[in-house]
Length: 114
Image 1 (tube, rainbow, N blue to C red):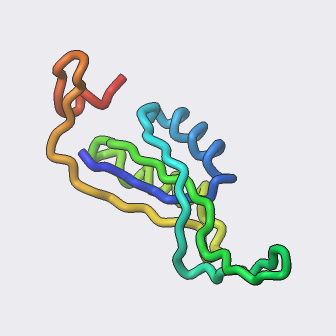
Image 2 (image 1 turned 90 degrees about the vertical axis):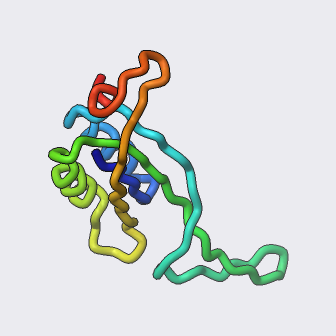
Image 3 (image 1 turned 60 degrees about the horizontal axis):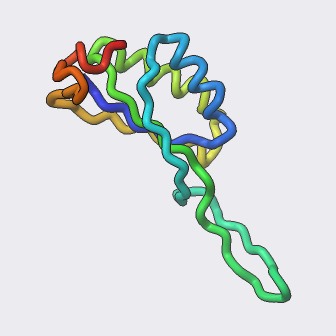
């Protein structure tokens, strides 16, 4: 199993969630985040004072999938969220040793399937 974490633009979330559901992935953890990378900050003015805006709103999505689904999920994320622009996001793939569903005690692939 693999844990896939992706950080994407907020406006891409609804479409990605729909496509992941169509693909059979329903278990997601979603966090609103702010971050910076290669995107250049902006300078704003408020009441005559200049200030830097260098953290941009992002959405962090986490999911655990089977080994055989990993490449397809990554391709799906890249197709939906990739525009070829700085700030499109990142995908992290992390090995998962085990998963336990607390309610039933199931573990492994059974714990992540519906």
